[in-house]
Image 1 (cartoon, each protein chain N blue to C red):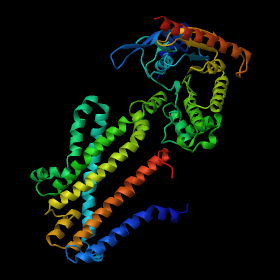
Image 2 (image 1 turned 30 degrees about the vertical axis):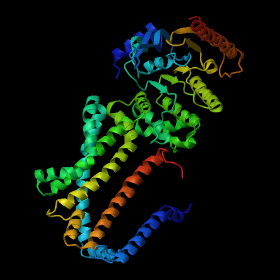
Image 3 (image 1 turned 180 degrees about the horizontal axis):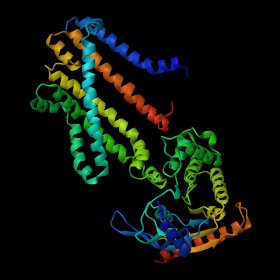
Image 4 (image 1 turned 120 degrees about the vertical axis):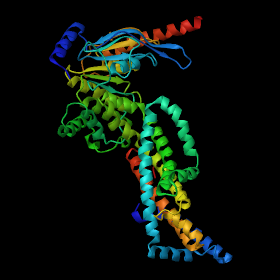
Length: 261
Length: 279
């Protein structure tokens, strides 16, 4: 299949869906005729304005820096705890239910506490994104290690791999697909919690995408508000698809774990 | 690491025991989920001399795989001893390669890298690994697939890669656990010939212990067939096969051994059945 046809087949339905949404939106906006539901074109202009005066790019950059920091800490902490739970049965049985409970609880529930602990500061926002992400990293790591086929472990041992070497050469690579799946889920949680955190914890120096929402809401600038929503949706989807989906596909294709076609 | 003293001990032990592999009064019990004690291996003793090709034959569940795992160092005996070169087995190691029922290849590595893996933990300089791995792939006639990944190979090809990987680090002992059980007839025959050739070419330096429930396979490949009873596994009888190699299944000597082992296994099953019917 040629590249052009592949792109058409992959992207065609997605673009058709977006076009459909825009049409419905434009029609609805025309019928309502109110400033609270601006037309797609008005939002597009607001988006270009935001790009022009630099507010959107600045917000994207600030948000991504916060996200990178909280996600990195979540990966470090979650991986360490997850491995600890995989290695120790008592720890697993006592802590796993707590971490599952943490994962189920909406991360935003931690925000009031974060504000009390850290005030309306950078740390409060980063803390909420971290709390949102690290349970998924932990549980993903734990599941990934528990699903390593015992046969591969035994094969590695009979070939002379011991201790750390066994982990490095057999167990880590065997656990990789499950681990990446956990990261992908954690990324989604981090992104959602960070937006919620930024929306509520205003007054920090650096303006992120969530702050942009709050600011535009307070000024009743609906086109700019919708432009910010569109940027949040697009950025989240892009990272999920371009980073995690591609990573996952690459790992699976190599191991013959992808369905044909 | 072996010191001079170890080597003297080793020579001593070999002289005394005279066996490459030995199990003495081996017992393995397991506790079932309902709390019963099940005996998998019941006071089994046998020896395998250096350079010998021995098959451990018996019906499913007779404990032959358990014995193999204990010799591989992947499992510990409940009582009795399992020895390599007269010394108790401490754990798995590259001196005893294992060929599992399934190929157990690492799916994230290429075929070549899977074979090279076997050279990582023995004293082979990194520069020599690729060449040696490639030589073993040529040996099993899969060098043209060196850069493929395991999932792109057929079941028989995968098991041939596993054989190359098992033998690449030049182990003294090959322990094989029904490695051809899941293959179709052609692939099975090809691999049997491959294994026979590798053993003949090792010229008495390699000891093979081959677990199977296939009487013909055991008779075709081995110098000696050790037949086990149904669970709990005990030794039933032993057959020596003097037929010259390479053998094939039409060989009269091989056929005679096959029918003899068959007869005693059938008798064993019959006794079981009549015992059960009598009750």
